[in-house]
Image (cartoon, rainbow, N blue to C red; front, side, top):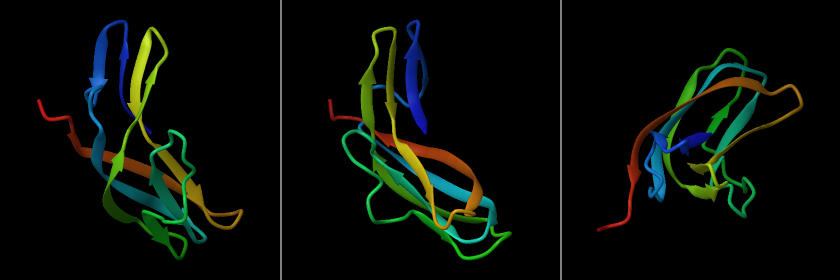
Length: 108
């Protein structure tokens, strides 16, 4: 999930000096059973914990959390972002909605 980025000097979303975001993530119109993991993707894998779990088809279920941001600099494009992973059996499916509710920046 892209939290913030700069293209041609224009900033979109979360400030580039943000170190973490608070969020709500929702699994919408689920199929089978499965889970969503929200994680810092810089040098890490999703890990062993989940942010949202669903147990049956047709659920809409949400949870909130905080995730550290990964920072990237591609020259023209700078970004801060995080990873979102869906897991479960091969037929686990869902739509994902992520709402950023706040962010942390270093003290000045």
